[in-house]
Amino acid sequence: MKRREFVKLSAGAASLLALPAALQSCMNEMNMDMNMAADAVPVIEGAFSAPLSFPAVTTTNFSMTAKSNTAALLNSQSTSVLGYATGILGPTIKVNTGATVSIPFQNQLSEETNIHWHGLLVPANMDGHPKDLVNSGANFNYNLPIDQRAGTYWYHPHPHGKTAKQVFMGLAGFFIVNDAEEQALNLPSGDQELLLVIQDKRIKNSQLNYAPTMGEVMTGYTGEYILVNGSNAPFHNVATRYYRLRVLNGSTARVYNLALSDNRAFDVIGADGGLLAQPVSVTSLMLAPGERADILVSFKSYAIGTELFLVNKTFNGGAQGKQEFKIMKFVVNQQVNDSFVKPGQLSTIQPLPASSAVKTRIMKIKGMMEGNGNMNMGGMGSGMHTINDKVYDLNRVDETVKAGDTEIWEFDNSAGDEIHPMHIHAVQFQVLSRTGGRGALIATEQGWKDTVLVMPGEKVRVIMTFPQKKGLFVFHCHNLEHEDDGMMLNFEIV
Ligand code: C2O
Ligand code: CU
Ligand code: CU
Image (cartoon, rainbow, N blue to C red; front, side, top):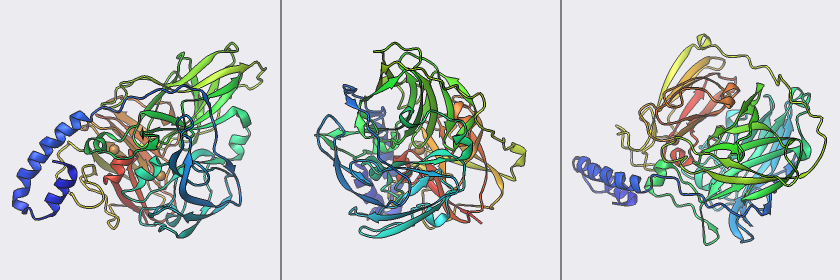
């Protein structure tokens, strides 16, 4: 039975009494579907012959338009995409803490959209809540007061049930905030600061193809082609010096275990919400959809002519992580003297002690096969992914928190077998603990975060203080297929 027929059956004439049997046989069918679609699609590596490109940088007095464009994603084939300016993706917005950014936005898509500023702590009515849509042909003026520390933030649409497709088609961009503290560190900048958004795409007959099966709603939709800044398998020439790589996983579902092809160590200097206290040296780093990593890579000791790849290493992740593949190529082509010295101290991060929390909320995150008590087949998706057994309802307030309160939220995937990167709007949090699964925190989790990866078997606790931004926000799984399927709840700051 296909999902559409099942939805029709459960919503249509079939009596409620007949449903459990129908449900049972459907669940069996789904199991088969699941097994057939269990693994992420294998990545096809490209030639690494196209130069890496970067979206235009914009600072003040700009407007944005969501629209249809064409771009060359693979070789030189012309592909229909969505973007906020020309081609795929949107401009890189760079502003300083303290600024107020005013962005006139126009929706030239044939359906509703909006913009969510992922990681920014903006007023509720500017946050791109799924109820605040900009209709096809309409305009909205985003007014964003930037009162938070420097960090690698980003933006993307958030219309419930359509987020994954719109992001997949190309709507996303970087939002970089700088401040005096970060400026004073003199980190590699200009040509030595590379903003990289990694996204996998499924491409058929040179066109983007977004059509998840039920099995792919479960595992997440993955693509055979890995794009960096909108082009497949690019290369970039580098000199024998330090580079700052600010990496965003803008994929709908694919997790990357980033490493250099020669297994050389690199330094993690920042996470979603800005700089760590000190650099942390690693040889690989997991990055889930929605997460960002700020890293320093030294090409100092490489000989001219060296080719080095940013790769994905295998990892233990159920349907994902079984394949090692190359993402992009660096070619060392210039000998220089680099006077940059890696700072020992980057910032200060005041830990929020667990004892400062006035409340702990348990969030049971459940995937498709975990016997959700509430088989809500209506709404946008099929509702197989839930938080505390609930499917997203635009009009229901699920959690109410007090502005200024510090709380612990525990994301519990201990019984699950799916990958869930959990994201909370309106705050930056600290990760307190991870039990089960990997059983420990990773380098980026020593800094401020807005998205945290909860792998199968894991329980992750985060702590945060809610800001004085009263109103309705969402938290959700940033596997965008899961999110669109209903794995999202509303919370209100009062
Ligand atoms: Cu990047 Cu609510 O999402
Ligand atoms: Cu967000
Ligand atoms: Cu999920």
